[in-house]
Image 1 (tube, rainbow, N blue to C red):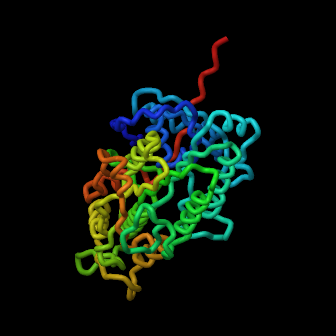
Image 2 (image 1 turned 180 degrees about the vertical axis):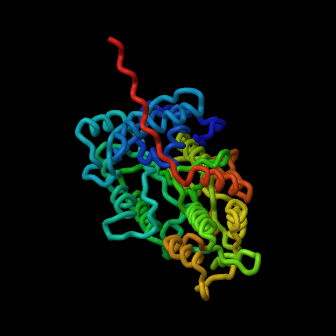
Image 3 (image 1 turned 135 degrees about the horizontal axis):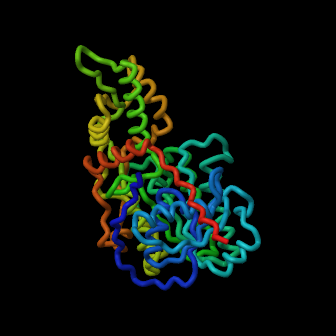
Length: 400
């Protein structure tokens, strides 16, 4: 089943002339593939820096995702230029031919590649390797190639554990980070702002990205999806084994160590992509930081109601923060597996969106409510919480 949207409509841009390529990292991830579609539709020539994986070459990975868009849009999109690269390799794994091509054809970088790992296993491991060392390598490429225009996808959660209003102009104000991912993204932004050979950089800070607002499509399943996936798996297993905790004829609710009022800021991938694409092609917007966040966060109580609706026999009860007394088997397994996301469920602060609203007054984010989360959840369950691009079909050899 292919879930990608066919009915997107881009806002009219200001008509920025794009004579040279935008060098783009992270083009094969969830947000990246939407940016490929949206920027291509705006006439932006793209050069994708892509690493090969165990199944496909860099060119095959890009052709695979482009073929999906072609099928859903009913037309063939122009293909980006593909450069095999790897953020973790010396000199990004680029050879002399690739470097010469970049020098000649690229005047802008959109740096979107990142590791979403919350906790590092080693000081030189992820997320530091991708988010800090990778950003440092991209900056060195910009310096050596004479590229001054950098667009960087960061995160709204550089704010760490703050609970006040977070301004777009702020970065490190002494806040305590919630995890290594947040620390690494603060460090990456600091590197970018310290690079004196750049024009003032353009920084995009989305909050928690979820699937497509129209059809629920996603290729990654973190955060809210992680709780959904784990709960779905545990309740399926308990039902199959007849091990659901019951009291009489009633299923015993799973206790949630939250109070139900915690707010999470969720934004859909299609909106984040459209916002970035529109700002990128508007030079008058460059050199600023944009919070790509929602003015209407979702309460954890709503998320719990969604879980109960889409997972058979799932019932939850909020008991407030603190360790559980005599946890059930399901509760033990749930909290053991969700420990890595412990900082994720904190109450989000208020994000200032002055720059974003000024740049995109006619592009408000979709409201993420109970009904949308149900559609997203059902789509993820139907996909089996998994997406793999298919190997592109090789052309038939020409007849002799």
